[in-house]
Amino acid sequence: MNINDIVKVAETRDIYLWGARQLGFSMLNSFSKEGLNVKGFLDSSPNLQGKIVLGRPVLNPDDILSKPPEDNFIVITSGFYAPEISDCCRKHGFSHEQDFVAAQELQTFDYQIDISGSCNLKCISCPRGNLTRHAKPGFMTADVFSKVLDKIVHEDPMAGAVALYNWGEPLLNPQLPEIVGICNKKGVNAAISSNLSLKKDFTDTIKAKPTWFRVSTSGYGASYEITHTGGKWDLFLNNMYKLRDLREQFHPQMNTEVFYHIYKDRDEDYKQMAELCDSLNFTLRVRHAAIAPLDNIEAIIKGAPVTEAVKKTQSLQTLSVPEAMEIARENKELPCPYTRCLWITWDLKIMHCMEWYNPDMVLTETNFLDTPIEDILNARSNSSFCKYCQSEGIHRCFLVYGDESLIEKRKSLPQN
Ligand SMILES: C[S@@+](CC[C@H](N)C(=O)[O-])C[C@H]1O[C@@H](n2cnc3c(N)ncnc32)[C@H](O)[C@@H]1O
Ligand code: SF4
Image (tube, rainbow, N blue to C red; front, side, top):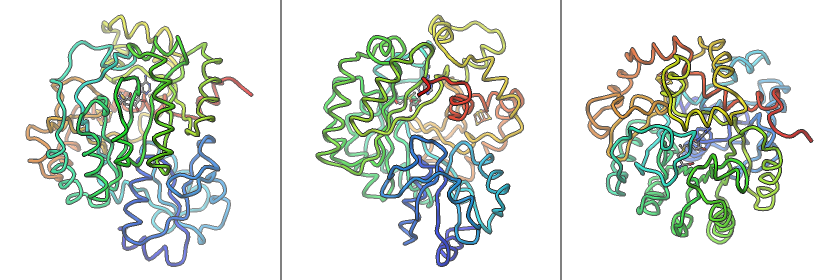
């Protein structure tokens, strides 16, 4: 199935995108360019249901699954849970290609362009703070970024959004406003994720109009400074208000999300964060705090030595690595969603995997600009490391941490 088939379907049916995040924004943008009207998003996250995201309402998937399939057509735009959602569609009488398709069948890769090769914080749950070996730091220039984006648009035309981060802090890149501007000029949505714990005037970045701005956080007040190690709460809080003001002034449509990592014994912190997000009109999304990257998960399950920062994170986690890995192993036959994510570093390396950090683990010997997409796909499908990772179930570990239904099941947040 290709975009022309979907344009045809849209003549008689309403189109819904299941998954209101990066891949959903990508498809919404690409479909709009084809003149295709998307009726709305579906998302199982209660925090999103009832909201308007990029001008479209977010519905509970049941609202559409309970109707006869012939009225609607679903495009699955969840980057990580597409197989589970496909199963759910089938169970409700929706047939693949006739009534639903996965965005992964239309777009080859999700692009994580790490325009900053460094971070201002050393969070204990992140390789920036819990590993000692790092790749060379630096920033992608706007000129280079422009070439990267041209290649993406040419080789993967349905890619309507790119993330401007992976392990780096995008606001550190002095050319971020130009980079966001390039995205808009070329008709590609820009996604930013920031710790917002830095002394930096980001007015020009918001003026440049990124589509999506995520703020990563954990805790509230003093507890924040433990897990967002090196961060200053007052500075962070001040920047949250500033972000709200700048959004109101320059870019009211900007999708603004707070991504809150859940650690144990922080019920009051969570309540305060929820109130803050309400007052600022930021969407609050949650996930169990993981210990990144997968290099650390491997070390833990193999009983290999880990750093003090990893041990400290383990002591604060509400979902432990053995618990998460037990669930991950139960699902290890499910595919790995990261095989279709591409981490491109500031100096144009194509790394093997966005969730592994070892600087030696490149996917291709040639840089992104010199490597045709077919060669990248080949390198991916022939990777013996992927086979190893999947045989251990490690590839599913972070999906367990991101599973919002598990947060509910385990009552990891205060109950109303
Ligand atoms: C490593 S950060 C880099 C981007 C930026 N510096 C930031 O903090 O958002 C990339 C993504 O990983 C997520 N992340 C970081 N630490 C995490 C943890 N312990 N558990 C779950 N997600 C985490 C962040 O929320 C962010 O969206
Ligand atoms: S199998 Fe493992 S190494 Fe390969 S893409 Fe998936 S998570 Fe990454």
